Length: 314
Image 1 (spheres, rainbow, N blue to C red):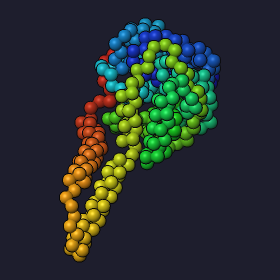
Image 2: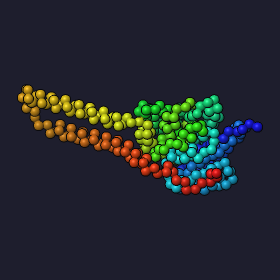
Image 3: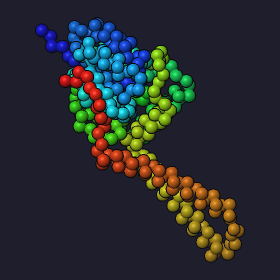
Image 4: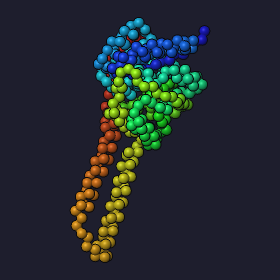
């Protein structure tokens, strides 16, 4: 008999009562076409939903032991939710999908084909998405900026819709990061990785739980986790201002001592320079503070997530 390989579908959820059942049935239908080669489990991490999400998950888990549910004691954030799903999966590989199915799961067979051919990571690259031009433009700028600033190559226009091999999962288990940015962490591990272009669907049920605040927080996590460029920028700017100040002081002394120049009182100039200096100090102290804050959270070694309830997690 052919030994079937196990797929772990990792699904982070928060207040998705309208999408749980359609997502579950879509995965069941997909796996019927793949059942000759693969078994599967569905690992759902619930970020302490406040609607009926967990009640619906309990009903599904009661009749289908392939559905594993981990409910957190509070909302720990999207990236931590995905990470917890990965490290609690048992599959030969794990495929992360969103509950709203905006990422087309009909790409899963193609992901599996590339994995079977030797790729350890197969990720979706968003060619287009049904969102406003403003947010699309911001996303494109962010992906290119973080790739340029990062010390590792990070794929552009790639989200968290991906397949990762068991070897990657074992590496993630060893990761100790209080603020994980999985796109960057997985990309920086190396191995054979491949992107598959696709068009992202529009959300048809419910509303996105990702606010602009969450997007900017994710952007900061990505930049600060994979780049020291902001710190270098602070150093270079400080050095540049010091050189300009030294040159200005030298010119002032030469003019005063050799040419007897009588410089007029420059109240406005002095005020501008003082305000500029204070602004730069505040900016770069803020950058340094961001890094120190991350060090502070890292050394406290608080758990990435706390699981309040679990179903079928054996």
